Amino acid sequence: MIAALLVVALQQPTAPPPPPKPTMQSPIAKAVVQPAEAAVTVGDTLRLSVSAFDSAGRPYTDYSSNWFTSGGFFEGGVDSTGLVTGGSTASVVFSAALCTGIGTSNDAVGV
Image (tube, rainbow, N blue to C red; front, side, top):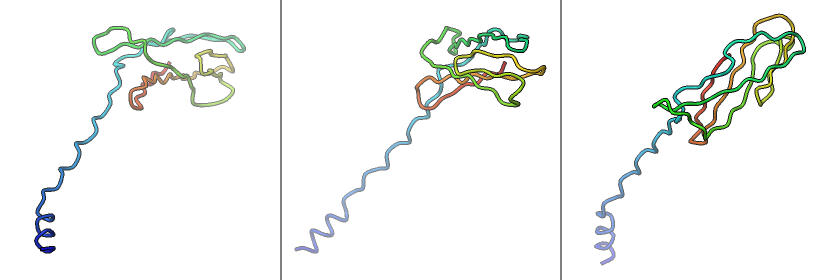
């Protein structure tokens, strides 16, 4: 009798594997930085701003932005709010990462 129960238990169908988790896409299709170009002298400051748009071109407002730069220390810098401080004469690229809170999507735009 125990053998019969064991055979019946082994013949039960197994559950199918769970479906794969969907990949979360960023709702931001385009980011626009203002001003797109600027000249800043040593010690002067300039505030950058970024606007986000969805795939239909509508403004998207549910995001946070963080600014950063790569390169040398003396050419200038940007804080996390987009305030640029001019340094020595050079060209510097500043970028903004836009975080939507959906998954870990980020969009970066260089200035």
